[in-house]
Image (tube, rainbow, N blue to C red):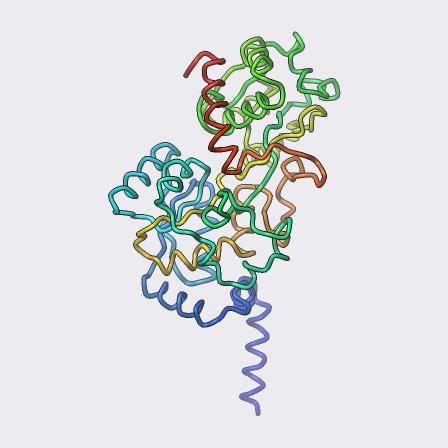
Length: 367
């Protein structure tokens, strides 16, 4: 009897241990024999190789190994270099990575040429396939087939960040207000002439107000460019350029946590922003070196702990209803009932974005 009591007490202790068995069992709840088989085979493979941006590497590696016992080898690098590497490996059948997490560029280099495996058939956890766990009652997919490129995040971009000590934010109520003479030479932006957050913001403005507005803003107001995401926010925080465009929230919040409470991102009444997934698109290449570990990883990243790990690192709004965390700033959370331009949908990204990008580069004087 005492042995039985001891076992029960031990089990109860594990259930309440932070990061213990409860955290693991919870996200796998209801999993069937196919999942157990995939998990066992994944552990035999020994690791999973994930390609993605550096800011998510620690959170995802730590979380996945904690919950599965399988180590993660993270491959990071510049967006362009990584895209070229993945395309080259896909064409030659020499994939060195199992899962890719990033933006939409792989639509052109991997999805459309047929180098991706569909992820939907590999999602086997009840906590992942249950529509009730997803915003809008279903997984949000980047591709029209709703099978290849699921989004971990869906958030509002296109806002301006302002230094409230250097400009009177109350006097900037619309995007048109940024054209006022007093703001000439006081605006900076992540470079809108190349792919990234600066071009995403500029593309939204071009869609919303036309190219003439973009030229008046970026050229007429003598906007200064940078290709350093941290620098553009630091400029705003120090007042070097008290208004900046194309900033990313995890850099904004890093400065705010460091004491720069003067940084604000107000919603402008004539343009609420655009929806994006940032680096939150999951892809599964064909011919991966660790196929079972890849299957386990895509299920984990689409589960509650996977989403929380990603959202905590990037401060992007989760597409799961049960993974909304308070650390994500309010200005990136979509407001119910507001109509946003969705830049992370196949038709827009494939048909509208290339033309807008070309027009923006030409309008702003080339690269």
